[in-house]
Length: 483
Ligand code: ADP
Image (cartoon, rainbow, N blue to C red):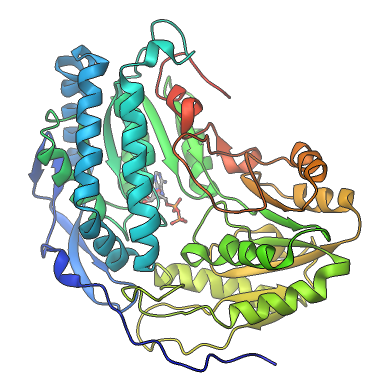
């Protein structure tokens, strides 16, 4: 029997009055906001309300941004000491903290993620990335990355829509700390916090052209990737686009890092603490609507505890609060776009047709906006598409195992290798399993924990290179690579 909560929560909406959204935006080039020519709407995925009109950068805009970045690199940024660069990074970090509520509200409106997550995860972590890298700016010589570390020059950075501000911070902070200037493109559905970040750059009096932000879609991204004035490409997004980028830069001198898809195994051994594991499963797949490249989207469950875990998981899922992302009690917000919702529906329908059993928590979904109830599929085999392909939504595929080796074999049977989770009370088993798993990030008895000091990145089709920590810093310096 599913338990029902015996009381209702009163709505606790965050105030929208904290942000001012302009009706139309241009690009941020050479320290100034410049008008764009073509525009497209950006909407609130929870209500389908048009929030603003975003510019679609074409060749002339990208050329201007690259030119501004080059000029800033040669005349200012490359001549400045690391200590001075660090001061700007600290300043940016502090302003982001001061304006954190504004950033959180804007992120939630534009992305659909719960305010609780943008407020407690995205924005604090973004500021933490700037603080962390500010500390490296004057210590590059002591980072063990060579005695005369040199920046690449101009970095072209393309980011996705799942953690818009946080992915910007992952890209911009190490680039600037290492002495590069940047041209960054946010994803087409979530440009607003990047444009607010441009204001922060102005407020911090960052020299003009050190950070340039152009908005647009894949065509703008391609212009950045193929621009001859760019020395390094950093991309986070789909494996499909990552492959296009890898092909485009292969015949050039451009250095590249790619942070792509995942299909992480979250392995629960029979000696794990069950209640904690259930929380870890929920956090692993339902955090950020499952729009997480390292999401624990394959639950690999020891057969002897499978029934107990699944019963507790369903009970727990029935209590997930789905709805208004601006409500501070909401756990699961809106799917970022109609297009993404259709992809989630399509792959889930494939799960049904391939014979897996679907179970969704009952919840009343709002009439407007893009929504998908938290869902699990049991009876999934390794051949099922829902066990192999990234769904990038709140959908969990459950597989079972009998022996530890079988768990490892199933976990590694994927073209990806971004992350994995291990749940066991036995330390030796955790260490053994973590050595067998082919994944860049492995969590033990926890999931989806992030820290700027810790390198993040994957094996196989999950990408090239690392972001965060000393490893991530090295990607922004010439001639040092942790590949
Ligand atoms: P998703 O499928 O999660 O939306 P994408 O890989 O399509 O991820 O998008 C991630 C980022 O890459 C976005 O900023 C998008 O505009 C950009 N992008 C899409 N296609 C290309 C391309 N061919 N070249 C460069 N950037 C691209």
